[in-house]
Length: 126
Image (cartoon, rainbow, N blue to C red; front, side, top):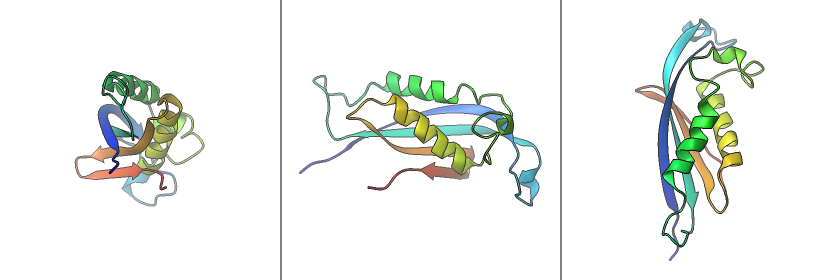
């Protein structure tokens, strides 16, 4: 029987945005204390019995988030050209983390919480 190991880290940023063409309150400037969770997966462990050191995942996530903290997201690439929705933020962080996580570990999921009761997730199937 085979299985997969999943490791999750969490970080947070504070940032403002406005949703373009939303047609509601969120089209106006507002901010969130975003909480971001990244889960990486591996089917194997190294000789130490570790899939990937949590510090490496935390460092990669901190790097991916650093240019967004305390910023107006609509002015920061890639959100200067796309709507800075929670969904797009989750996908962008996922793609940035893919560049930083060494094989055989892979990014499994990115979850972006914009409030205590609202989140968006991005993951790839298959």
